[in-house]
Length: 277
Image (tube, rainbow, N blue to C red; front, side, top):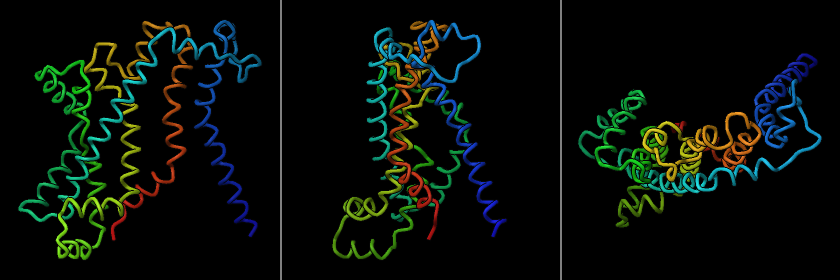
């Protein structure tokens, strides 16, 4: 009994220390963002607290650089991309899971094989295509390469495959179309996985850096990930770390809130999608 209690206490102590290590960068980011610029530069030894916090850095984050526009661009990009992707992957996953057609399993295998292709090769192909279509520095060029995902199709297809075939046959006897069956039966049943995919895609879009940086050189189309670099180079300057941290806090806050609100749905959705039977 004592051995079990000691083991439990050790596990909680280890998890607590690990949590402190993980959360410390976030604490340091927030702490730096509320420090005065002069006081921060005067610190020869880093201070782990401040007695005179200020919100001036947050004001500078919105007035010195167009952070509000970067946030709006990112919001539009995230919402449109996620909505289009949900439509595409839902139809594709339903076709692979429920419809019967020649070469279905072979085609699905080819889809999975696409996951083995390095991301860099896909970026090069997408860049060439978007450039040839003259869609650089447009929201269309930003959005198009991100409206599908082989992994999300696979995740949703496995979830759809768990729904009993008897429901499908009964619906077809009643004269229900495949689209109506998908909308009325499959989607409500698989809602946890869809919520998980939606949240993960939102996080992916919000943190997107390489593709937006590659396809846009007009600041009117910068997302927050690219805006950080622009802020560092042409906004506050490399020395104004507190203002930079304030901008990073503003950019990170929506994702932190999103994860805290839907963390249970994310975990249950991933577990549900990865369980067969």
